[in-house]
Amino acid sequence: MRNGDPEPGDKPDAIIPLVRHTLAGRYEDLSPGAVLATKTFILDSFGVIISGSLAPGVPQTLGAFRGWGGREESTVLVSGERLPAPSAAMMNSFMLHNQEFDCVHDLAVLHPFTTALPVALAVAEVKGGVTGREFLTALAFGVDVSCSIGISSRSPMSFFRPGTAGAFGAVAAGGKISGMDEKTLANAMGIVYSQICGTLQPHHEGALVISMQTGFNARAAATALTLAEEGIIGASGVLEGRYGYFRLFEGEYQVDDALDNLGRVWQVERVGHKPFPCGRLTQGVVEAALTMRKNHGFTAEDVEECQAIVSPLVQRLVGRPLDHDAPSAQYAKLSIPFVVASALIKDTVFITDFWEEALVNPAVHDLARRIHVVRDPAIQDENAMVPLSLLIRLKNGFEHELTLDQMLGHPDKPLSRDQHLTKFKNCWEVGAGHLPAANQQRLIDLVDELEDVASVEEIIRLLVP
Image 1 (cartoon, one colour):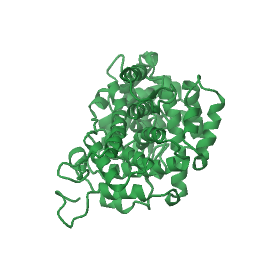
Image 2 (tube, rainbow, N blue to C red):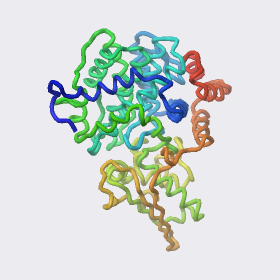
Image 3 (cartoon, rainbow, N blue to C red):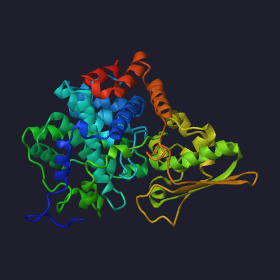
Image 4 (tube, rainbow, N blue to C red):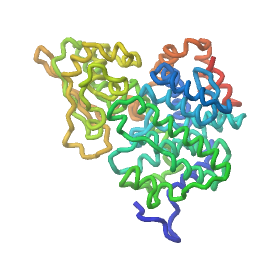
């Protein structure tokens, strides 16, 4: 860690090599794995946005933006509304995150596409004529920026990193599409730093606004890009200054390794799917429960109690008991007892398991009260997600236990192509009934061939009425 404000002759703030990496990067520099992963999670994100259009708060937020008016320059997907770029970016980011179904970089502990993709889309529409290859490249480099910042933290998370660090990745992606020079993009990074926001308090409470914090930062990124192009000057010690991001938002950090790996390790290759629409930290326990249910043939009615033994991060953020008779969807998605109970009863977890009637299901509540989450004292890493263990005790006295060293969806344990497409199609079926059915396969084909798509508008047209 470099301490203090830079002195003459010191290295520049860490934001500068990230800006230079972004602007110098070409499609040809990307590894085949990075190209494939970027396409994969673009499609995954589109599916999640479609399902997210059904979530609480979407009509109200869209109504507020519509009432404020402004230039019709960028598209809100699924509905087809045209709004100013910052507003469209926020709406699409909100819909991408509100189901807790968006892809994730486990080590960085953030959802890099959830800020970068909506901003890249909004900027591409404003600019016009942005090719699929340019769009793909910008997203891959944006993911590199936000995830390099995320993996550099060495402290427990207290601010909402998917929004705060994600904002820098969104500026990188949008600035690359815009064709900014180094000075302008560096200013945009400084301007967005003055706007970034989001804490874990609404996460802790299960408040609806937790779903909007990536959107607030996507809006801030789109705003910062426009202001930088107008010549507004932002702070320069963005990441490592006396009051820079790492000190104020993270704490201990070590960024040099991430910077040394730029262009050699592509962070988008370390992004993984969320198989289930709930907090990422709940998903390993869900996977363990479903695996044991399948392997041993018991049902939810056979279960006496469960104990999940998890890392400090998991216990702190999603070990919350189900102590509300009518929890919010956000609270339930971030509660291991609720999510595991739903999984054992229904043999899956999907977005409908967090709709109003499902949230008050007495069978789910009864089983959830018998699911306990404890911290594994052997795990000292405050940011670790795994390993985890689940012990299930049946009413007949039998016990089953399973330990997982990695969660399904992680790049080391990825979804298959068929599983990936099944998730996308399930999201389409639940939320895109008003769109032409043929658009579904056409969208899959266009994303598969993204580097040959003449304009991003071809894709956007498939995602609106």
